[in-house]
Length: 294
Image 1 (cartoon, helix red, strand yellow):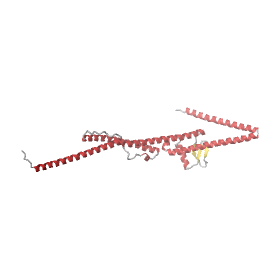
Image 2 (image 1 turned 135 degrees about the vertical axis):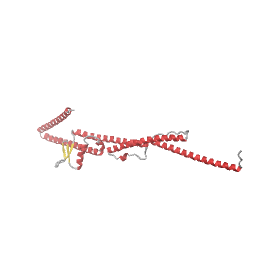
Image 3 (image 1 turned 90 degrees about the horizontal axis):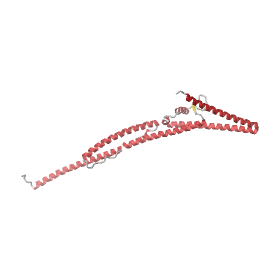
Image 4 (image 1 turned 60 degrees about the vertical axis):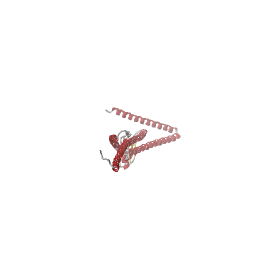
C-alpha cells in the first residue's frame, strides 16, 4: 500500500497536474486556431481563383475533418491553376491577333490594350471584345470606301467615260482633253497620280491605308464633278448661242428660219450618228471579249 500523502503534498501535486494540463490545452487550442486560420485562408484563396477564371466557388463540407478539407482544397486549387494557365495562353493568342489587326488597319495598338488589373475570364472577354471592335472597324471602312467608289462610278456613267490622270509634259499646259486630265507637275500631283494607280482597283489597301485612300477618292470625285459641271456648262452655252442665232435669223427673214431649222436637223443627225458609233464600239468590245480564247 502506497504511503499516504500529507495534505500539503496532495494539494501541490494536484496543482502541478492542473498547470501541466492547462498548458497542454492552451497549446492544443492555439494549434487548432492556427489550423482553422490556414483552412479559412485556403478556402478564400481557392474562391478568389475560382472567381478569376469565371467559376463558382466549390461548396464546403462542414462535416469533413480539417485534414480532409485541406486535401480537397489542394486538389481543387491545382485544377483551377491549370484552367488559369489555359486562359492566359488564350489571352496571349487573342492579343497577338489584336496587334496584327492594329498593324493591318493602321491604328494605335495602345487603344486596344488590356487593363493590367483585369485577369482571368474577365481579361479573356475583354481581349475578344477588342478583337470584335477591330473587326467592326474594318467592316465600317469597307462600307465607306464602297460608297465612295459607287459615287465615282455614278459620275463616270453620267459622263459616259472614265477619267484618266497624268502629269503635264515639259511645256504642256494643265487641262483636260476628253477623258484625260493633265495635271501640273508638282509633288502633290505626283502623289495623286501614284495613288490613282494604287487605288484604281479595290483591294486590301482600301482598308489598311484607309485615310490616304479616302482622301484620294474624294479628290477623284471632285475631278469628276468638275468635269461634269464643265460639260453641262458648255452644252448650255452652245444651246444658248444656237437659240440666239436662230432667233436673229428668223426675225430677219423666212430663209433664216429655214436655215435655223436645217441647222437643228443636222445637229440632231450628228448626235444620232455619234450615238450609233458609240453603241457600235460597245458591241464590238463585247463581241471581242466573247471571242477571246479561254
